[in-house]
Image (cartoon, rainbow, N blue to C red; front, side):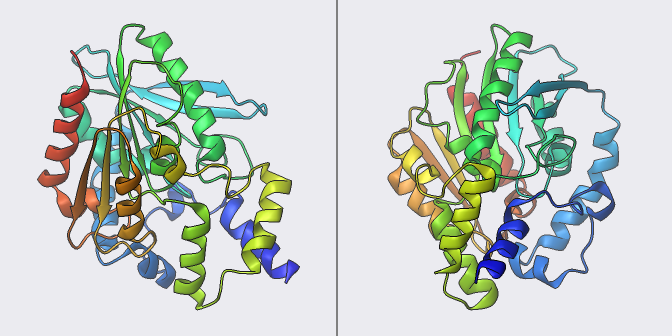
Length: 306
């Protein structure tokens, strides 16, 4: 049992060496189709269409050092029309900033925003061995907010995250962060780690989560320095201080939309929700098209003062 649990832990939480540009557009993985949903090929096609063009945009590279001494990397894309409004966008599991947001990034630049795209710890060009599903990533995000505020001292910030990134931004919703962070957009976030991993064990392997999950959490505490229960997006939104837009694909197979509804129902701040029909995991912007961007951009404008 310990050997199985340790393998599960490593698969879930350690840096994935295949999460690189070279493997970005691999569709020949049946597990991906099972998890990502019916429009995953459209998601990849959309990304292929824009990633080279987005990669040619000028950017400024920044590094910060996490509390544990990890060098973390982020990219600032200044809007051609001078502005101090910035969207910090946090990517999901086994991804990195420019991979996740090459398409959405163009939409936000066209709408007049700067973009700041960090690579999470243990992802992309950032250092680190262990992903913590938003727990330590949210602490890193505080450092990125401070970095953006040194660049735009009078600016305003929107936080947006997808999947693990959605959980990351939600974990800050109840915390004391700079007042120029005006709102949060969470796309396909999980509600609690226990609920999500219990679901995946049943869905992927038709197995009960326990006792494997207990051992996995033991390794998580030992190696990543976190636990499953002390923090969760669900606990954070129940005391949220910021407006939140929740987005989820109705056919998400990785994180069921019921978890989004649970987050929305628990949220105590101003809130809105968008379910996108026929959208799988991280596919709401592809399937939703104008509906998605009209919703996100109107939500941003509602809470930005300039």
